[in-house]
Amino acid sequence: MRDLVYTGFMSLDGVVDSPGGGPGEEHRSAGWVVKDLEFVPEAWSLKGEELEETTALMFGRHSYESFATTWPASEDHADYKELPKYVVSTTLPDDALVDGWGPQTILRSTEDVAALKQGDGGKIFIHGSAELARRLADADLIDQYNLLVFPVLLGAGTSVFSRADRAKQMLSLREFDTYSNGIMKLVYDVRR
Image (cartoon, rainbow, N blue to C red; front, side, top):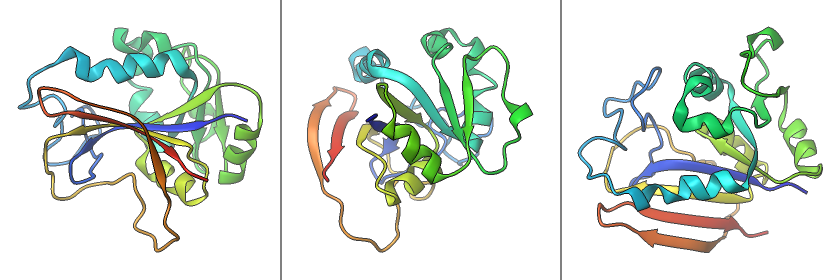
């Protein structure tokens, strides 16, 4: 069975909207992970650790369309280029997948994601894709959260966590760290 890991940048008030400020990121404070904060290299070490564990990537349609315009040619994302990618979408046409970005598969339902998890292979990481992560968490398919929490309050925006009235979900803290610029690394396993 494969683990499904959500990884993301989050404000202290739970917003994951528009962290990098790139194309398609429309939040009024877009770029909040790089603006007004001292760069501390060790605060980003989680991303290197994740790369060692990543065997595949998963995106929702909007994140896929956004990342597919920049990641294939990005030096910062070169190690992801040939990894298998899964796009969860009921509307993305097959011919919309970009060329030259490794093997790509469109999954059409939450059930398709559940079936993928039942197969062989290592961890699948979800980048961006907050709506997808909420839907998969509501279906009890997320196994781990890797979060870099930034010392900023954004007030409004997209959250990765559902506001649906459902039974509580307990998490176990696997790993944490804090950095001199105020960023916190929080790695949680979902308890089942």
